[in-house]
Length: 269
Image 1 (cartoon, rainbow, N blue to C red):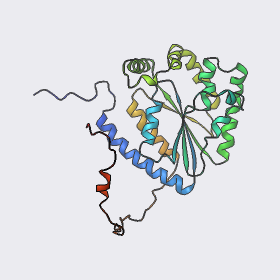
Image 2: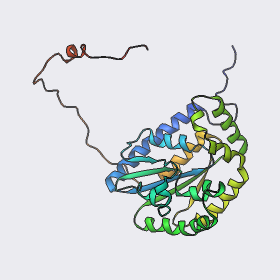
Image 3: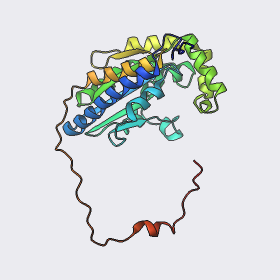
Image 4: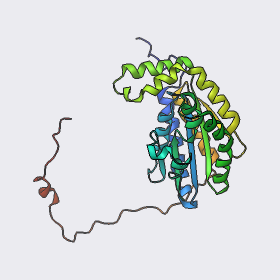
């Protein structure tokens, strides 16, 4: 008999172990969700990082078992001509949470400190002004009662290259590879310097950055969710035991017979 091939030959977390831990953490996210609604909390979670660092997969792991009415994802496209004339940050604020909501920003106002700066989409004065004013901006809404949690996902050069090459080859992932991603790959060190400057200027006591090593996507997701849970103190809310009521027989008829007259999809599977 041949030995069973290990699920993981690269020192990365095995799928079996990942699924087991993820289920536990997603259960806690559901409890956190109930607490956020119960207490009327307002939470913002910012995800930044290099392209292909795993932001999308981490956000999906957070949101796939909770209500989209409580956990909302804001992934804004490039600004319109009108938005370009607004005060910077204005278009993000309209997505801020109301009571009982968690808003996850897949990229955020920190675009100005990253892609806009590196690719020349903003002036030097706009860039410097952002770095100076961003901590004041965040302090303003934090003091207004919003909980802000900021994650930076850091992936290494070799792993980023592997993920880009996988996207090129896989038709199911090619949509993830934009022309701007290719540009970011070519400008690795420019983005590194922009990252360092951003972290130096905006890592504050009110709104610190938390770095997540993401070469191992599975571990990164688990570590990120675990840390998120630790940042918002919550308690398990007790529920009354749910019991299904008896179905009323009033107006009873064979509803399945009437359905045979409807148009169904072809059952190919």
